[in-house]
Amino acid sequence: MNLLQALTDDAIMGQHFKGESWEPWRAVLAAAFALPMTDEQRQVFSKLSGGREAPRERTREAFIIAGRRSAKSHIAAATAVYTACIGCELDGTLSRLSRGEIGTVSLLAVDRRQAAVALSYVRGLLESSPLLSAMVAKDAGDSIALTNGTVIEVSTADYRRVRGRTLLAAIMDEVCFWRDESSQNPDQEVYRALQPALATTGGLLLAVSSPYSRKGLAWSRHKKYFGKSDGVLVIQAATADLNPTIDPAIIEAAMQDDPDAAMAEWGGQFRRDIEQIFTHEAVDGVTVPGRRELPPVDGVEYFGFVDPSGGAHDAMTLGISHRQGDVAVLDLVSEIRPPFNPSEAVKEFSDILRRYRLSSVSGDAYAAGWTVEAFRKAGIRYEKSPMTRSEIYSAFLPMVNSGQCELLDDDRLRSQLIGLERKTSRTRIVIDHGPNGADDLINSAAGALTRASLRTAPLLIFEALFDEPDAAALDPPVMRIGW
Image 1 (cartoon, rainbow, N blue to C red):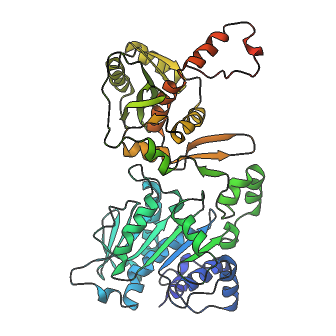
Image 2 (image 1 turned 120 degrees about the vertical axis):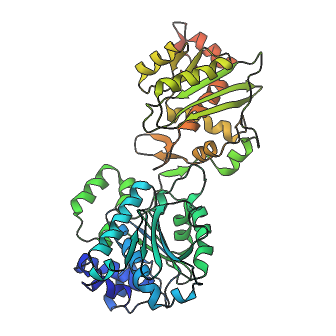
């Protein structure tokens, strides 16, 4: 029984994939698994694959880039269940395993929430079929062991988790949105870790995702293989291509509101309005290898910047810097991860600030009243930054590119910096972290470094000039941003 037969057989998974609306997916899966195709399916496949020929044998890698609500996760779960329960026995994969070796189908998700969703789909498919449910030997929470000796494992994307396993298949769910602060390229690193794990069985690597920016594993595969009749199979589809039941009015409304976002969310197109602005090379150039922290030195003027948090979800971070000639130097970054008591975090940071002879600290306007009062009680004056987070990053960008700052050797700091993106809309330009990302640590570091860099003689003169009645009439206009 092949995958398409399993998806149409009510005794297996057919009850979940009934109707003509699933026909586009049947065309895609028929091509990926080199199954017989009808003329209509060939036409659909040609449209969604950039006009390439259908593979003559089951592809080793398939990347399906599709709009939201196109049932990607349903298909990913069905592929995982079929491979573990049926496919691995029919194609002789299990016979290639050594005695005691466990064949695993790994479904990797963007985060814990998405992993839970994927696991619920897998369980639903198994439980709704008497034949499949009888194969469940043990449900261990994030993995399901089957009576044929295979395991379906659902987890978050982490290259460490796939090492040491023998994989029958690997499914990368929403790979365009993977983020890991301990890894600069989690999709690439997971991909590299999956290759040896799939080598014994020749198992399928299937990546399904809505598109995002023009970077990362999915974009590189699309750029290299889309429309090509060899190598990796790449499918690119709008939501309506794979899910004709979607209400067109929803898509039209999204297109009217934000065309660039809608073309990615619903049109399956990689976004042109988002770009990575801090390159690996530039960040490497200003990172001092092995430097974790610099102690306070007498006679040096320090600058502090804090990114506050309520303690439930986001980290609270502190950055301290000083100026050395024309270079702003990062002396310290401290991070308190949630959950934590905000008052205790303020006390801890205030103690650090006093070590560097600082009686004040700057930060954003988060819960301004509470933040000001909490630091006041700890003996530190909290000053609201005159610059927004995006403005700080805009000022920090030329500092990095020109080598006018020195960063500590910290993986999370580096990952957050490289993960910042510039988004251009019809009305403004914003620099921020991407989906599922974070920028708490780099915000405090960039804030501190920008303070040190902007505390120059010209800006001090500008501040003095603004005390004069005619300062606003200066030509050229003077920047009002200062510390």
